[in-house]
Length: 401
Ligand SMILES: *Cc1c(COP(=O)(O)O)cnc(C)c1O
Image 1: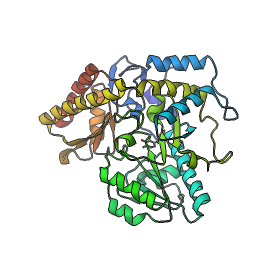
Image 2: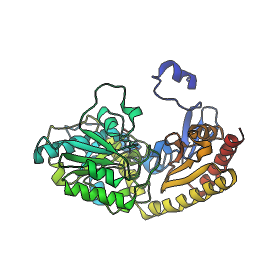
Image 3: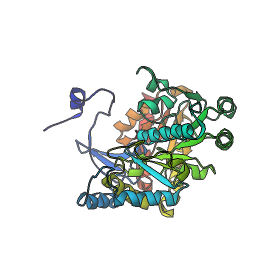
Image 4: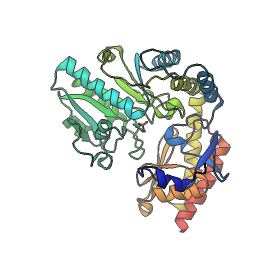
């Protein structure tokens, strides 16, 4: 059967607006479309393909597990899930793991756990959740309500209640909002979708202290920032602040759908048998791939390599900006970087993305003003230089149009 980009408009719900080519194959940080055109991938499937496309360790784990056992449901446990949970608890503050299939589901579990924990420990009045404007936590109705972007949460009828928002990096506003009624605070330790915004060190520290003062759980949504993206296994490790609950997805499976919620034994005890669940969560196939991804990422070679690659990205973006004067700053951490457009190009991030695709480079936007890069953590120097040469042509095309 012959399918093309035009087929999308015939058979798909129009909630996405994909590029006008259809990728069919990938290897490392290169991808080929139906016409055989070769692309450099600076998008990484939105911070997912942490080891690029078809990494041999992931293909190996997938095929090995694929020939063994695919799925059981949580009526049974399985070896890959147990091994992955052990490795995640060994590598982090956490002592207990709940597996889901996506970031949103991991956050949904975190929010439900926080509500249940507060209810059982402090009573039903402690139910408020505080989150931050421009934050993003997924597209289920609870997570989109906690997320701080009205464009994503409005227009679907009544929302789950007791969710409050304030500005990120505004500790004073946060201090006014938090109270004995707060059960949890959900934040990204580096805002991704909201425009690649790093937290101030004082802000994160202050949020942690105020959570402790008011017996509120601190939930770090590391769905985008986790699994080596910032050069540390999880971003919290670079901030010297430990959350009570951490959610992880995207890079965790290296391209296979999986998510997880990590927490302490004491908090986890409140999600008793039967209180929450998922048919696929902790599926052996997903866990086997994630275990392989974690084994490769959580090594000094890969984690230390992130900083070198970040430096090269920043250097080359700086050179492009010296020539074309399009960015106000390059921000973010590790290989989650955002080039913020200056006044002259305000609101035009998508134009740069389309121009990049035309030059055979895949990249991302984060809002209307930021071009985002979230490539494989093992992208080669040659691939970075080749991709940036393409990006420079794209920038020139936008500037000279
Ligand atoms: C992508 C993302 C999510 C949602 O993950 P899905 O797998 O799309 O459900 C949640 N939080 C953050 C910070 C994200 O970047």
